[in-house]
Length: 261
Length: 350
Image 1 (cartoon, each protein chain N blue to C red):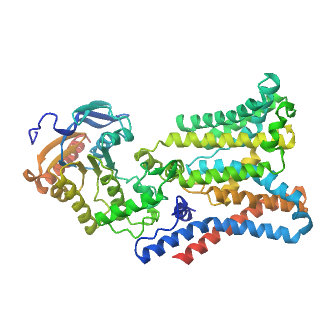
Image 2: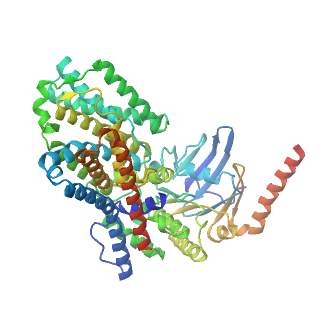
Image 3: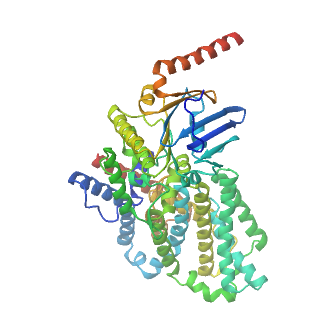
């Protein structure tokens, strides 16, 4: 099943036999996943397969019930988002975690605010936010407006910029292209290619669009019903193959349902 | 309401001095947002000044006097404003404290029992009175945040308990201020202007806390998008606990101040009215009941507007029986004016 022979200790992140239940519902049954240093891993799967749950465990927002996480060769029990951040893990959530009422630059520095003494250093945060958005080529008229006034794509770009410039070594992106237009997708693709080129950041991308995933990712993992059922290097698979697997799963489930009915 | 509330988040941490860089359009846009932000409080300022002018011009001899100024600003507005500071913080982070008026009632009794019964030195007894408010806030926070009750219910319950405790321990009789504490009382609330000065200082401090510190920013984040705030690693529970405790201390402070000012510790002082007034002041001042936005300065102006109504109607001589009808109507009118002015302003902008 494994597509590459991992060099021991060379992984940025490893999940071993990770499980998570919510009451009677098993969200993740037995997840085994590895992310190489500087690698971009695509995590695909149907709705409800457990992708977002896995991401929330990897970034410290939720804790697994079973199994263990190994980060930079050391076993770690992530206690909180802050804890994960301190280990260089940062995430962009599906819901973006933006605060509508706050300005663009306050959102970009949320919970990492720059201060002088106890007071916020707004000047510095504003300038840096502007700088980062310009560097990425994201077109936002003003960093002083509340994010509520921005489009879906702009909001998403801000959330991604926030994570990219957090100096994270492991980036977790939950559907980074969901609300984006073609131009914005291209911008984010370029940013990710840049990061990939530098080779210092390891990235997991959750995606629904298999084409986009294959374009940017080195390797693809398919998550089905709480387990990883496919692990292939991108060039060894195709949109057609991935589609077939997911559709086959759906057909099989329908048949079983009909049989039991 | 949500439409207006989304906008006024721009208030939080507005530019400290307009940025000079960027092209002209961006500069103008930023300036526009800055002016917009300031105007949010301008609406309630206009309402407040209009009310003051109305009563001032129609009742020159009675309304415009030293005695009435003390009455209006120190005796009536200051307690509302101080408690409103706490309610603003709580409303912004998505909670409310209905018990604060009963913390107000009970806190002076702590001083009385500590000093008179147990011989605790005056200054320490007063500090313990304030600590009592802190503990009440802690309990409200525990029930709301840790046990997950809605704060409306939590504080309804703790409020009743405090009300009952005050009546029970005092046998429903007022107590006099312990003589040993009188010297401190002058600073706390007995001097005619002291309460107003306290209010101004507290409002100034918490205006900065809300607009210029991480605590303020995280309070807005908590109320604006609680899940998003948690995902960003903000300790939402800590923010809520803290704001309940701040409100508790402020409630206790006002209760102690009023006890010194009136020179009596009354088990029927405080109660629901100061809380209702302060929530009203906060809302008149532009704080959203649904969380995510609000200003301390607005609540301060709202407290003065409200007090002008209370004091003004008293001077005009509206009979006590019909006062509340007129008062309720006036609050609604002030709110309608506020909302309509905000709408007009937005139409002018877009």
